[in-house]
Image (tube, rainbow, N blue to C red; front, side, top):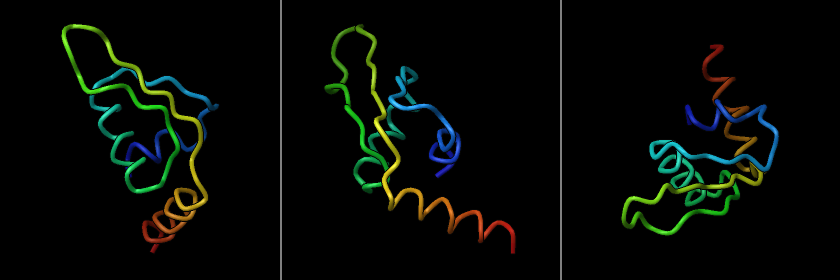
Length: 72
């Protein structure tokens, strides 16, 4: 969720190159919180890139819920 909050106000599409962020993107796609084009599994020494296309309505709702929880 921290990664989702970090990208909340980003301009999309957004390229992500950091391996930790790519892993977060994979998890958020699996949870249907974002839509993204994900790279194939790591192979060799090539750099991977994920492209986040958008935060889904479910992702936006999760962000609103989290903000409400943090304010109480």
